Image 1 (cartoon, rainbow, N blue to C red):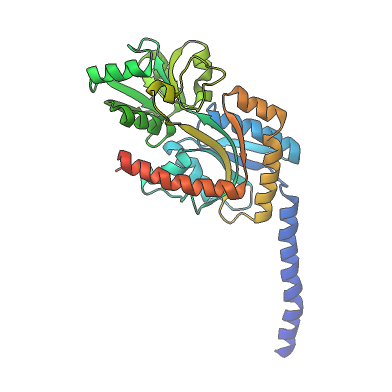
Image 2 (image 1 turned 135 degrees about the vertical axis):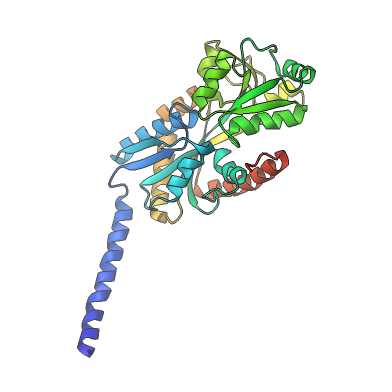
Length: 328
């Protein structure tokens, strides 16, 4: 028996060291196979376009494919849940937007993920503003005219959203509260259908991200009433900021785009990802892509990104409670 114990000891320690060396080597070589970038929104959305540009650049830098997967549904939480439950090895990542990421759990109540503890923030990449648009036949051409019409016709107006707690929903609710408007949301399953019905006049209002609305605004298919940025957008200088339209400070209504990994992802992998994203996000073609979309390049690393998310989760919960929009 003693000889067996001694023999086991002789072989078990080197075996453990060998296994550990293998893990360290794997982390150092990361990535060695395709990386899946889950976007929890439909193809063609602002976050999807940034993800695809970033994935191509990351693939070129690492000589490994970064594959974008669209898992739309449940206001952005469906894809987030899938990544939260994935193996924490750096090969399943979440590229998402907030408020949905931070607000989703507060709105849905029984959400299957915790935005603070179920993910490791890697990098914030960009930010963009929401823009309030109207059907061309709507009986108002400005936010002031919208407010007057709504008050003269209570309960007769509605607006499109892409789901409870999504930016297109919360943004209008904030404006409603500020102006005392009586307009009701119509929740769509996709941004594409919400935009289509706004253009067709089935709903008069919608507040998508500026990148999602930019082409339709430039083509004259919809009219812009106000944008949630601190300054007017270079591509739409005729659309006033919310502060200008309200004739009072704020509110700024913006969303960020960022990369997160499942909790437990090795620090070496997170650091490698953050380093590669920093190089990719500052590459001229990515800066040009983001700017052309009407978004703003905004690089934030893991530690600061985590701090910002914690603060946003707290404020989001307070907003949801204040507006009383949580799902029953």
